[in-house]
Amino acid sequence: PTPTLAQMAGGRALQDYRRYIAARFTPVVAVVTSPDVDAACAASGLSFVDALRPFADVRGINVPIRTGAEYSYALTQFQIRLHTCAEVRQPHPERADEHLARVTASWAAASEVALSRSLTRVPHDVPGLIALAKDGDPVDGSDCAPWFATHRAALERTLMFAEHEAVDHPVAVMFVVSSAVADPVAAFTNLAEDPHSWPPVMQSEAANPNVPRYYVLLHDARRSAAAVATAAAAAVAAAAAVAAAHAATTADAAGAGEGGDAAAVTATAAATAAAAAAAAAAAVVTAAKAALDAKLQRLRATFGATSVSILPINSGTGLTPPPDIWSQHAEVRVATSATPAANDHNSIVKRGALFSNDDVAAHRAFVADYVSRALLPLMETRVRALNANIAATRKGIKNQFKSFWGRSTGTKDKPEGDGGYTHASPESQIRVAGDLAFMLEDYETAASHYRLLQGDYKADKAWRRLGAVQEALGQVLVMCKVNTWNFEGAPFRDARREAEAALEAA
Image (cartoon, rainbow, N blue to C red; front, side, top):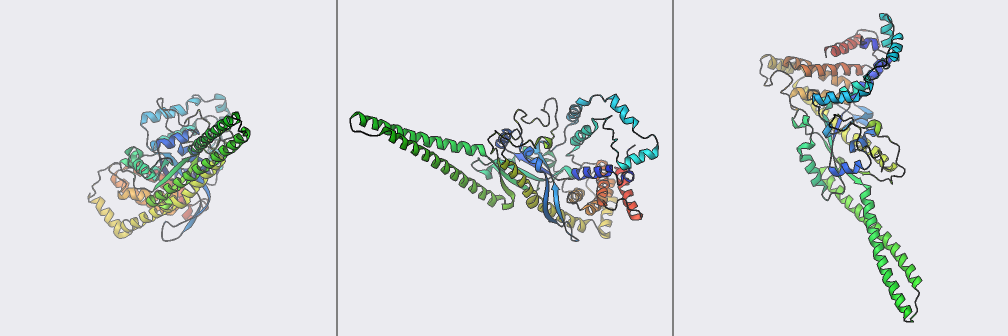
């Protein structure tokens, strides 16, 4: 039987469960890229999202957060989930089944020997089983069911991005275009206005499409290198032509008895060619930098100074690429027989093939800067506004009577069931506020919002939404009392019982 939270208390199983919850309640940032960006990343065997995902767990920051008026605290680490917009959708059931079958195909049969070995170590009495669950002994069934962890992760991936759970709805959207485009403002605008750029949950307005936007210019170093090489080659060719003309003139003069030093002329021409090539290369670099700075200034004037960044890529030579840090973090794409497998993005090319160590450092710094200077302040602002609205409209005796009166008299326009909600529905606003507070580690506020929602969803007979919010309530209560979870006394026992009851109800 599955151990209860009380049985897991203090053991490794509860610690693992808390880590799982923390990873689950991390904000999703949807990423929209142009074809030029996809091509530049593919040259190094990556997608843009995969290039950044190794750095999504940001540490060493110090961002003050105040979700309410009572107190403030600081976040020193924060994790985000980066997903391409094409993957921010729940797959069709048939595609989900194919994905599950594919990822577990290598474990079609369990090893009977391993199964027997595991079962001999499992206690046969109830106290022994409880102690095993509480102490977190390594006997976890991985020998007899080696496919279970992979299957569970794949199943959870197919259940993500549902309309009835806001935890997977994007909290921000990042648009990425190439720095080579002539008019980046127009390129970003076209990308944002394309309906295919937006996930289905935003198109249906189940999720709010008016989330913060961030704009990234991806600078492919190969383009700069190619321009420099072209300019240098042109300068050398021009200098060579001049040298050839001088050599011909010198030869004619020597034949006429006028003297002349052909070798000296040739050496001078070679030196002139080298100087011309260097000057041409420097001029190209200077002009390219000036053009890039002008584009950045225009973008920041249009979209805001804190909403625009430039990011380099493919600065390496390809001879000594950095170690592969991308494969283990690659985005899991739902694979079918008609779609390539999840992490086989341009698998012919080694991941990071054209990256330099400077590229890696720049990407790490970019994600940390984006999280600390852009994303977290915007999430804080949004949750504070939602909290203030909820306090004004739903909390307090007067508002509770108004809410109950509206439900009991049937004055609500929404039909019964899980449908009929949009991101502007009061219930959806409360769910988003709870999830944002959860992500920002304000667990008490999140729990209060989830408790508030239970009555609404129950009255509307929105059973899926009710189950999801009860699960979230149980999980946030597990995170609330980390240091006092095992304490004795009525308040601590009641907290454990509430978490247990919420999870069982879900």
